[in-house]
Length: 79
Image (cartoon, rainbow, N blue to C red; front, side, top):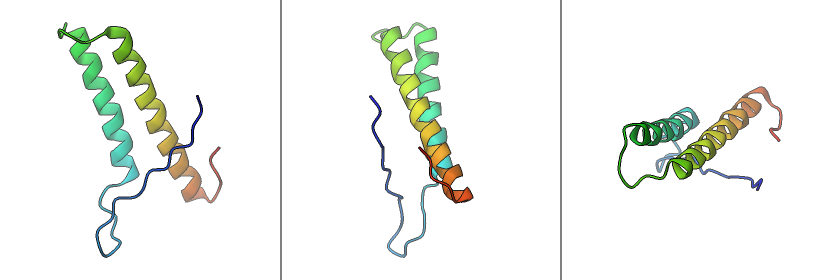
């Protein structure tokens, strides 16, 4: 499953960026890390395999955002 993800920038009515891509990728990694911490702490109702899979997918998405930003800033195309 390899789908392209397009994330619109969150801007105000003047076009000023409100959320940076770095903040989004950090948030994705933080959410995954907190889920893993809850599983490790024995939180009821969380399936370890599901949390692991979701955490991996969030990290992959964060990586794609980072790569796209690096490619954009260097003038190349991420693929």
